[in-house]
Length: 391
Ligand SMILES: Cc1cc2nc3c(=O)[nH]c(=O)nc-3n(C[C@H](O)[C@H](O)[C@H](O)COP(=O)(O)OP(=O)(O)OC[C@H]3O[C@@H](n4cnc5c(N)ncnc54)[C@H](O)[C@@H]3O)c2cc1C
Image (cartoon, rainbow, N blue to C red; front, top):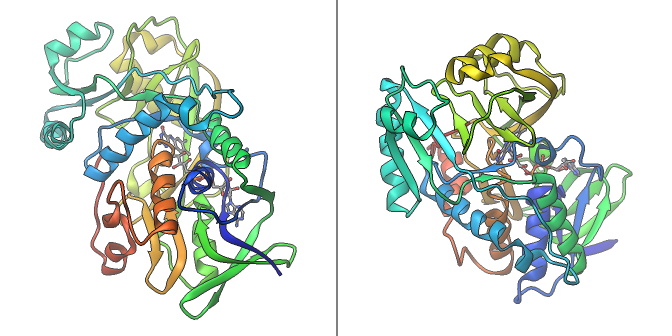
């Protein structure tokens, strides 16, 4: 039977980041195989993402992971250049602006305190300051806004994933287009994987980086992973609006928009009770006409003349317990590592998670950033580590 030291299931942002960090680790000399069922990457969350990075989280580890992500992206040429060719992921460091009405102000302030303690470059702005800085914003109903002054913005998500992949391959990682149908177990250890064509591959470590496919993979190894696939639609629209210095704006309603090329993209997560598990890619067009357009035009009156040119649907891998990643081995299977349940913020955390996975494979624990609170213990104990800033 064919054998590799590490098999990674899923070769998009997380799988490719893990592959890169492992291959680049000075203390790792093993072989790595990435099994990806669709080399077009057409439907993975990475390719359908809003591709943005923020430091404004409520969970300190998420802040730290994003801080590392920003640094990694700024220095991407140093990390992921191949033969002198440095990738360009078009990082626009234009910030996030979270808006709050009076009832949301306390949460904004609590998050602000956590973020400032962690050195986030963020400013809490009152209504008048918001108006002075962003004259195009309607602020009458607002109480405050939290603006990232550096480190936050957006990039080419597909480009980041390709750059990880290309560098991993240059460092000796093998990529193969194949669907994994099962993780094979031998007691408390995974001994390999079975592919859809019936062939089997043995390995010392399996990494589950299968996004919304992660739960099925976990189930094949007898593990219940609390991750569901939830649809999110993104709309690209043009508008005559000129919004100088426009950051990624998260309205008090939860709707977001940001510049994209000559226009803007926007979206909104549905209320929890209208957010069923879902695997189709049908765009919910009514969402723009009935929810987003009126909401955004109330916030930015110039958006009254918005015109949708394109729209797509993708899926969050939502951790239904607490909206935070489940990272590391399950106590029942010591060599099956999970990196799932990103709940809409996995792209920006791919550098930190890739590094963390490589540390788990090569040593006995985290060496740079302690992410142990994201492990299975809280899941199995039913003790959520809740991230409240979910977009
Ligand atoms: C609309 C939308 C907007 C988003 N916006 C942001 C954002 O602004 N910022 C941010 O940080 N994150 C954002 N996200 C989330 C982010 O895209 C994901 O968290 C991240 O891309 C997850 O990467 P992944 O590699 O884990 O999963 P994916 O990108 O979904 O990749 C999983 C891969 O595994 C493969 N696979 C699955 N099952 C198998 C199997 N059995 N065998 C072989 N291969 C398999 C799939 O084909 C796929 O390529 C957004 C997501 C969506 C949908």
